[in-house]
Image 1: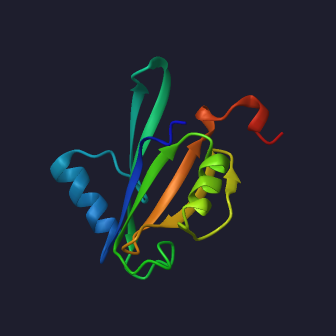
Image 2: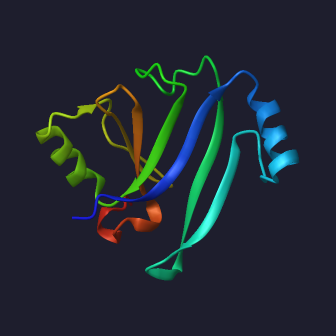
Length: 134
């Protein structure tokens, strides 16, 4: 079973998210919004399918990375998140929350051995029609 299929996003805390977005837009040419930037690409094994990677700034006091005390979070694109979570549980990986489903995919958060929070994302475009909530 394929597990991680790519990088879904990089999220980090900063003192001034808006200022950071502006700096990256001005100096590195990122097309930022108030939340950051999205990089779109085509899947190598199926160029007709699009994918995206997010780059997002968060305020220092965000609770979104809890319980990790680290100032960053990596999001990985995965296939079949439900099966992967069951396998992670068998391996005694700390699962932070239940799988949540949104219009753009399914998400769950886990911790690695050093307490880094990891967001796992099964994008909607990777979901099988049988798994899509109606």
